[in-house]
Each structure stands twice: as structure tokens, then as C-alpha cells.
Length: 183
Image (cartoon, rainbow, N blue to C red; front, side, top):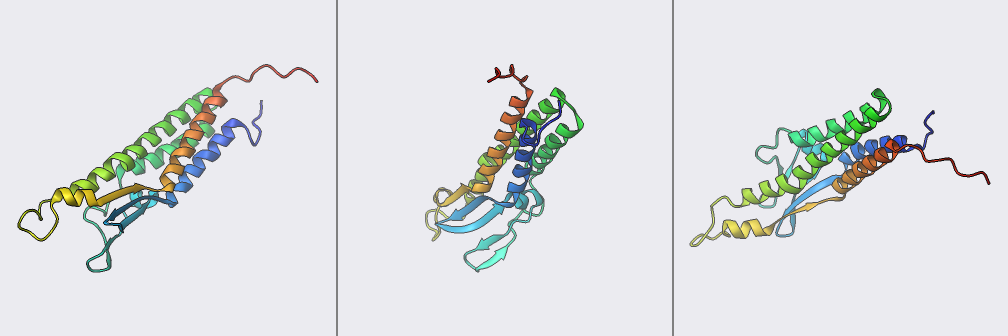
């Protein structure tokens, strides 16, 4: 049976393409004392092109270790592409199952990076000793409390598109029900 333009499988493909496009929207913002230090898109995370606004010098700098892309974000993008390709290369149930698995693994990799790794790295970087009693600066614990990592709309739209793609692929797996009775 030929697929229509708005079939569940085609809508799932569109959702995967949207998930890739949402990589260009802001994903994460890191701020300290209500002053934005870093705002990153999914593409910034994948490529490692992250710039930090230094409030002391008012200059844009590259944070240490930001020259290489985040491997899990790159893996997430590759898995989305693989899930999309699987629906074209593998026909029937095999393509849909591969697409569901690829989308689920991509969502897991992206969620782990944005919701666990980035906040952990931001707060651990703030806990480097340098302040404390007798010094003029805040203690590491105080610094860690001042740092806020906020997940932005681009990340949530990416995850939403992947969940929609998985649901549509699952619905496309189900056999078509009995035809409706004639009117």
C-alpha cells in the first residue's frame, strides 16, 4: 500500500528533520549572579564553538576545553540522521524499529549531556578552591550556588520532536484497523 504524504511514517520523518533543525536554536544558558556567561545552541555544543562572556574584562573568550565538540551531542545528531535514513533504506517494520531505537538513543544521549553533564561541569568548575575564609572572594560552595544552568527552548523542542517521531513510528508499526463501515 503506497504511503500518503501525511502518513504516520512520513510525519515521523518530518519530526526527525525538525529535531535536527532545532539544533540551531539555543539549548543551554549558563549564568552567574544573573549575568549570562554562555549561551549555547546544539550546533555550538556539537562543534565546540562556545564563547564565554567574561564580565570582568567585558570580552568574549573561549572557555578551557571548548575547542572540541561534545561527543554525545554529535552522537545524538548522527543517531537522528541514522534513524531518518533507516526509514528510507529499510522497508517496513525493520525501518520503523530502527528509527524508534535511533530516536530513543539520540534523546537519551542529548538528555544526559544537557541535563546531567553540563550542569555538573558548570558547578564543578565553580568549586575550584580560590576563595574561602580570609580571602576577599566567595567560597567554592557559594560560587556553585550562584551559577545557574538553564535549559532553553531549542533543547526541549528537539526532545519533543524526537518523542513525537517515536510515537508516530510506533503508531505506523501497528496494523491498520478494520475499514470503517460504509455510510
